[in-house]
Length: 296
Image (cartoon, rainbow, N blue to C red; front, side, top):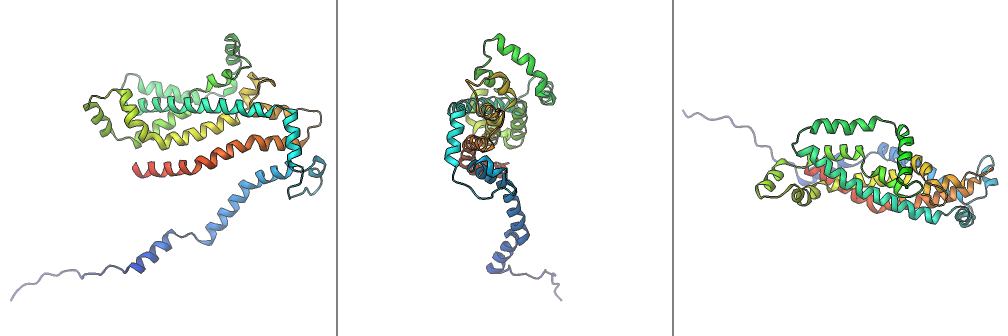
């Protein structure tokens, strides 16, 4: 008598049609998801739409109850009034300069610092990183008086450099890039670079920068929007002759009876560059985040 081995039954794989149907059921969104996405879109788009409506109608119409809900014919005339009241063109150029310089310097320096804190070993590394994080807990208003005194002593009060210099590096950016590089940058790549005789700067340029590109794109977008929307420090150190967009908009509404339609028209002009930058870079940033997540 010969012994036989009990073998589990062979289960044939499901047909391709069944697999595709299972994937569609897993990936497809239900009606509730579309309803939630639609409501979220309406909530975020409604203020911008109302700004367009208010910028395109006279102030008297916007003070009615209920206010109009459709754009009017006065958009270009209100924009012209805003441009005549304040030098918004120069303010836009100043904001582009300030936001661009701050973004480039913040991304570069924070990536360098994040790489050092994440992968390099040196004495006092943890203490310095804790000190950098501690500066995030200090309210910005506490440093306004000594910072303005320093800028005045340097002869920079009223100049764009007084807005740029205090923001060349951000503690949040250092923390963000350090946390990103801890996971995204394999230590084996750095060891291979050291074995090939690469210096730290060469390693940073050839290895760290390509890996850190997705995180740098996110940090650049956040930094640019923060610098563009900054109001507190620029309104203190700058005057009406050399404003950024936020300072110009503040001066636009400083009359005895501010014209809300003109203010909304100026706000629309000051908001469009940020929207254009987001539309141009948003897809690349999301794609970079996904690529970095897959690589990590």
